[in-house]
Length: 151
Image 1 (cartoon, rainbow, N blue to C red):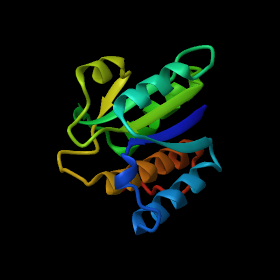
Image 2: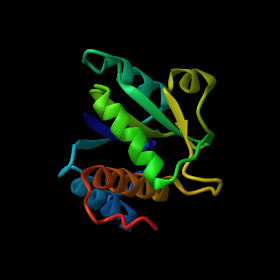
Image 3: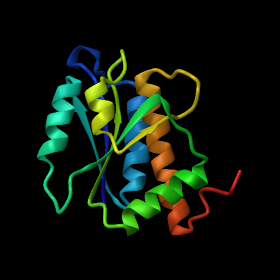
Image 4: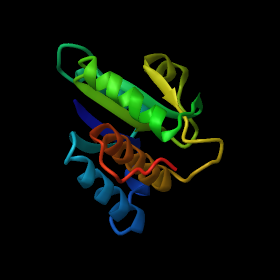
């Protein structure tokens, strides 16, 4: 299963020197030891949706959109969800952080799951790091690695 961490980030808002970018890249690199992982940034929601529709494979990309109204999971529940998707034959799993004003109804309809990191509001750059760390944590849980000690 290939995992993509995507974000709607207009070019004017992108930064190459942010400490959060280094943390994000570190967790993404760690995750590649367990699964194929990459990241994508899009100028707009429509660009992301078009990209999702162009992904090839036996089935369409499984899209999990981060949304404050989405489901919340413990790290163990999140890992179990990823494991079921992997074991069920999902080829491409895409997590996406949306535009500053939230996802449109069209995007929410396209999503296979709306997922919330919690009830707090995070800046997009920090949400990317938290998401990347949780994906890494989930992959280590599934692999039986001691990174996640259960608390």
